[in-house]
Length: 380
Image 1: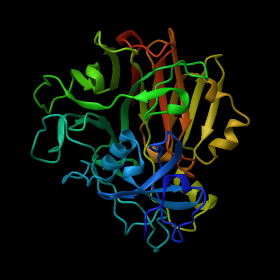
Image 2: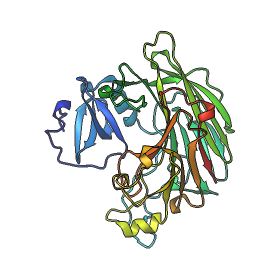
Image 3: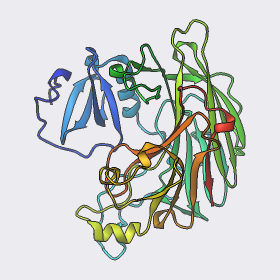
Image 4: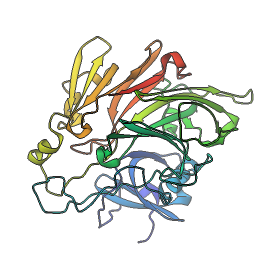
């Protein structure tokens, strides 16, 4: 297939539509134009994106450096080790009563460039440190992200797919026209926001199989140091951070921290609400809004439909997640304090019925998320 120009994205159709990854990323071409599309695949010269029901093949040379780097990271093969959870068996259908095999995405190990020393052997070989408990395992991967694997004894939940902590960090060279200082996961030139890439870690601690409290100094572009604090116990985890900008930086770093749900579950082609109900049952997110109201976000309803009748997307105080797909686990998510902070829940993709959703904590001015306002995840 011959590559097309980025400027022709809305004009040229690709005849074969394939299933793209569920996370929507922002892509900016060399002329500064930004679109939102899902990554499908990539190679040394091109990247295939999925948007408006179609696939588009784009030359990497037509993209800005940040988008080229994003394409390379997403195209990288997974580490040799798979996640330390029960493997997904594609031969097992989502509906136990059916003998038909579903079309699913197999679980793979975390991706991304290895920036930290790793344990190097065993099932946690590609991870820097880990804590194993009866309710969950939490681990810091060599790519710098924290992964939380829910379990019930020896049984893995969510098909072995982890919940993920990620920091977003960048700067504004002009005020955001929307009037806030929200940190995004990629450059948004239309909002005057530019992402600062993670390039390494300064004097990282030695790898450990007893992850407790850990402090990291992540090195970002422009010489910025992101000081990360993370704490893990048998009852849950907490995370916080502060950016240290050198005097040479003209624009201060803004940041936020996200806690992301898995993006897919075992589902057969052709399944509908009846089959989904059997699998999901009462699974839902219950949020407590800033006004003190409690609202329920069922996994069987679409985000767009819920936004028309609920107010959770305007800001929440905490979230409580439970239901069949979480087994006996009950998860509480929220900041230690909402002082000068915004905590919200939202959806990236609208994948139905288990929609890839996330929780974001940020300072009102985009500044530090100190330990007193840390994001906490409690697990019972």
